[in-house]
Each structure stands twice: as structure tokens, then as C-alpha cells.
Length: 279
Length: 174
Image 1 (cartoon, helix red, strand yellow):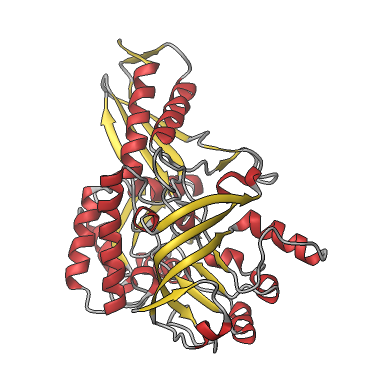
Image 2: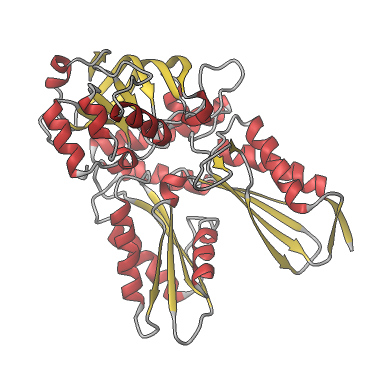
């Protein structure tokens, strides 16, 4: 067994929280720059310029890209040959989130009770763990803004329905989001599993490089089709119109039951933020 | 680009057209979900809101933490439609402009027209950039709400786009 102190995971989490909130992902930046080059609508071009300038301002001034520093999601892929020593893993992760968020002057956006709305804080983070082969731990921090999270959709399709119906559903979710969730969007989709699997896959799909299409032929075709249709909605950057409503569509799939076909949509704003490290 | 100074009185708003870009300087107040709930509760009971709402500019924003040596942290707009239920009451109390992101309900559009107010959007997801236009920031009410407290912001050349003008004309999609 390879021993990894929980404190090491905590420190890594702290570092990733600061990085994710301040430095825009390079893959997202590349797509934003290319969208700006193609943009012909004056107001939309000004909005894309502001987005690119904001990424420079955040990095230069060590300020979060967005005031909504999200509900912190932490994904841990833990090698089965690893023994985590020291304190409890969840405590280590939350301690790391607290330190990283405080260091980066993030917002305390988490309320401890969903109805009483009491006590805003940086934590608890939503922690997902996967046990994987090997002797390493991969930590991924994904601060998920809630303007876009509020536009999440889940639909349980009949197993006899086709990919086309799912494509139209995803497009309708983007249309429904309109300008509310900070377009241009990156649209995450999860298909298959149970309802919870589909939702989690939709979120995880946003962690994939947005320049890369799915290796699966069927999913790749759907990704392209959804992007083409969403970009005909004429929502545009910040709702100002034009052909740039989404930058990319990422779909992940999982085996499912003979009786069902769950599909979930998890939209990200243009400030798609995440950071990863391997210990 | 048109430059405007607060307070935004009706005469300054009357000439604005949907789609127009504006640079705003002066005093604006942040208020989002929970602050709206409290202000609306105060108004419906005939109480006094924590801010003089006449000709006031309300910014739907909850800033991130203030880094040491800075005036304010990241401070972009939040989704305006969540404030739609409260907006008519605030407009009735004299609020002349709202700043946020995204569309508004038909009812809010009608109220904007009726009260000769204006709805602006600003660059969403660009909080680090917008922070550069803030000269002063202080919490003036509901400090227990943390990031949802009411902040008084002194801004200089804060960038806006008219999304719904005082005659109820809308930028397409809003």
C-alpha cells in the first residue's frame, strides 16, 4: 500500500480551489477566442471582449473570475493501492476547500440548511469518490456556479425513443435557459444509468476538454448536432444575439436498464472552471 | 457611448433606448434574493426600507470576498428573473433602474413601462473586470446576510446595456 497523508490531499485541494476560481481553463479560453474572431454582431463581440478581458483581469489581480465561486464539487479518484492516513478524508477535503476559498477571496455561497438558508460558508463541498486501479489519487475541483446549475434538466425517455429526441430535449433546455445562465454555454449531458447516474455524468462531462469530441461515434454525432441547433437559437453571448450561444457540447454515457433511457443536461456558463492534480 | 450620473431621475431615463450602451457613474445599491425578500416584507408592512428607494439603482449582485488592499472582490450580476416577484413592489417604491443578467417576466416589463423605469444588463460572469469600476464599497444593511447584504457601491463608468427601456421596448430575447 502506498501511504498518502490526508493533509497532502487537503493541501492539494486548497491549491486547486484557488487555481480553478482565478484561472480560466485553457480549453475554454481557446474556444472563446475563436468565437470572438467569428463574431459579427457588435454587442455580442463587445460581450466576448469583456469575457476575455475578465479572464486577464482575474489572473492579473488574483481575483475570482466570477463572484459566484460556486458550490464546490470535489472529485476524488482514489487508487485502490492507496492508504489514506491521518484525519478523515471528508474533513481533509473540506478543510482544503475552506483554505483555498479564503486565500482566493471567494464567496461564502453555501448555506447549511436549504430552507432556513442559515449560515453562509465555503463548505461543505460536494465530494464524489471513485475507487480506481493504481496507487495514485487524482483530485479535481469544480466550482459550479448556480445561475447555470438552476437550468439543469432530467428526462426519463422511453427506451424506444431515438437520439434525435434527446437532441431536441437538450436544445430545449438551452432555449429555456435563455440569457439567464451566462451564455455562451458549455452543455454537459449524461445519458444512461439511473436518474442519478445521468445527472452525475452530465456534470462530469463538463470536466472533459471542451475541444475534444466523444470517441463514441453516436455520441459525437449528437454533440455536433446539438451544438449546431443551439447556435441557431440566436441567444448569443449574454443574450445579445448571434450565432454563439454555446461553445461546446460534451456527452458521457453509461449502460442502463432495458426499460429506460435517462438523459440529464447540466449547463455551464462561459466561465467553466475546474482544476486537477495527481498525487 | 452615453454617460450617465446617478441619481437616475425619470428625465435621464426617458431618452434611453433598448440596445444602447451606457457608462454609469455614481451610487448604486446591491440587493439579491434574501435582501429583496426583506425589503419587500418591510414595504408591504408599511415599514421603511434600509435604502431611500426613490430614483435608486438596484444592482442584483452578491460580491465575493474583498481581497486585502482592494475596494471589492469579484462583483458581476446575478440572474434577474429570481427577483421578478419582488421587482413590481420596489418599482412602486421609486426604484428607477435595475441591473442584472438575463430576461424578465412580462409583468416586470409592464411595470417598467408603467413606472418609466429601466432594466440594464451588464457583463455577466465578468466580476473581476467590473470590480475595476468600483471606487468605494460598504455594507449598509442586512450584514447578517453575508454576501447577500446590501452594499452601497460608488462606481465610475460601470458598463451597461439597456435591455428594457422606459417605454417597454426590449432588446430581442429579454
